[in-house]
Length: 91
Image (tube, rainbow, N blue to C red; front, side, top):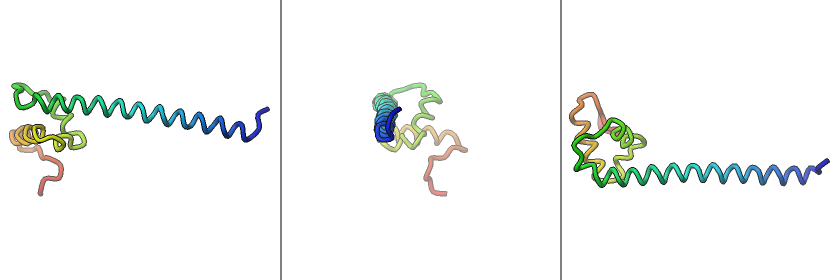
């Protein structure tokens, strides 16, 4: 039978491993989103057809506010939809 100290040490190591795995997964998702955001910012002003998924991606967490090209595109896209509004717009 393992002593309480050994069990506590094992639990701590397992907890640290889970935390590191979660942190790594979060960083991977963030890196992928940032890479796509940079790509989108570089091409959005030349796009002829912008998908709803791209618009939703820019709107999620106000990503459009991070880069000027995205902000400009998002502003003009929402102008064409009278019922659309940008978060934090004056009421």
